[in-house]
Amino acid sequence: MSRILFTRMHARALLLATLACLSMHVAAAEELRIVTEELPPYNMTQNGQVTGLSTEVVQAVLKEVGMQATIQSMPWARAYDIALNAENVMIYSITRTTQREKLFKWVGVIAPTRMFLFSRADANLNIKTLDEARKYQTATVNEDAGEQFLVSNGFALGKNLQSNNRYELNYEKLKLGRVDLWIANELAAYYLVRQAGDDPAKTLTRALALPEVNAEGGLDMAFSLKTPDAVVERFRKGLETIKKNGTYDSLQKKWL
Image 1 (cartoon, rainbow, N blue to C red):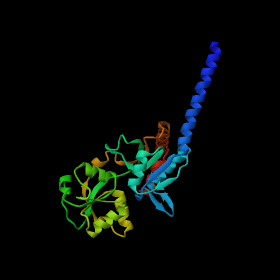
Image 2 (cartoon, rainbow, N blue to C red):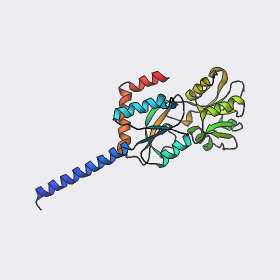
Image 3 (tube, rainbow, N blue to C red):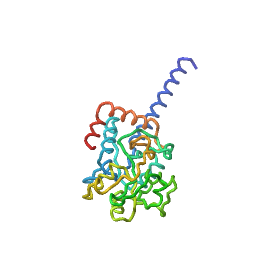
């Protein structure tokens, strides 16, 4: 076989391999599944459509990378399980913690967050440490970052943690005195309190700040480990682009 013929065959083989690789990534992108939960004002369903601050950031990134995908809202534990085990799944708004670091392929921060243990304003609880907080009943959401953090710090489900699937149920429990504390994202907590017709300034007290839950200070979008790296990188660049061109800041101002 001549050297020229061999070179042409080698070049063709490389081209076919490249096209096959690109086809695989395109197929993966076309089959992308996006899951989230009801966490207003970050992600929430209104008039049958998923919207919210984080949702609009995700949609802006999708537009930037030239892709379309349906966003499904469901209980967090179910969304989390799907993202842990299925192929080509994006999940948001997810807190990037040490415990979760190797469980997902992370894209970047899409919204700010601050986590607190909240108490009722009239409860007059004086809590300075997690050790002191263990004496009280705390409302959590199944498998969310707050619950995982408390469990990793010696709290126990069914003992001093009461787990639910919906954040608004936790506020109801706190308001009715069925729990003493509620671990929640500040923005989401205040939104839910206002939706219930109450004033957060008069109803809630930040009993204990928990910055260690999320060192990044933001909620992320992330992919399942079974998602091709090329797809993840495409979204990283898309998120970076909308942060540089002003789209991200505009959405933050709209919702915050």
